[in-house]
Image 1: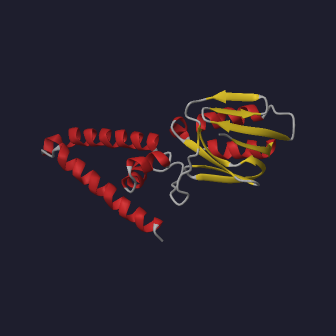
Image 2 (image 1 turned 180 degrees about the vertical axis):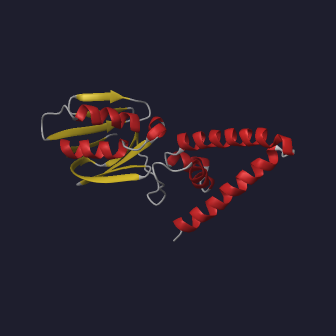
Image 3 (image 1 turned 30 degrees about the vertical axis):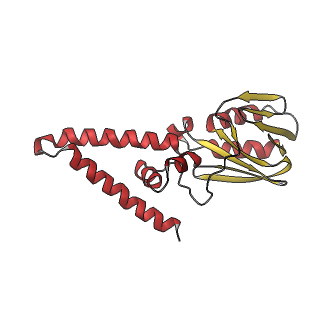
Length: 196
């Protein structure tokens, strides 16, 4: 199984640039989802989405690491023709004569288009969204890396607060409960926003 389409090189360059910008430290964990139809390819990542006109040969969906998109953005600058052929298999993407392998390139995955957050979302927003999803939902949305990072930051913040408040005899459990209540409240606000 594969997806395959022809696209203008300039459109591919613009799409990869849009999706790789403003990723900050999340570029190592973020993914881009590509939905290919007969005439449009939708490139989507957390906080960013763009559509480009294409000639779809084999429609389907794929998930690519942002790091792979950065490679594509760099190599696309060297393409001479106006149009190029893109083929994606599990573990491999080929654009023109260039190709790269990555086991994180997968076919058939597309997240819920109604769930999204800014590319620079805070840890609290990330944890709030994760609280609304199952573990499989977090994975399907491509949020696993961000959620793990946010959970580590939460635990580090709780540890620092515990040390700072130790003279006042405030225990770690009390701080953790307060943090969890804050995340739950943010989750309620987010749920209300998503259900509008």
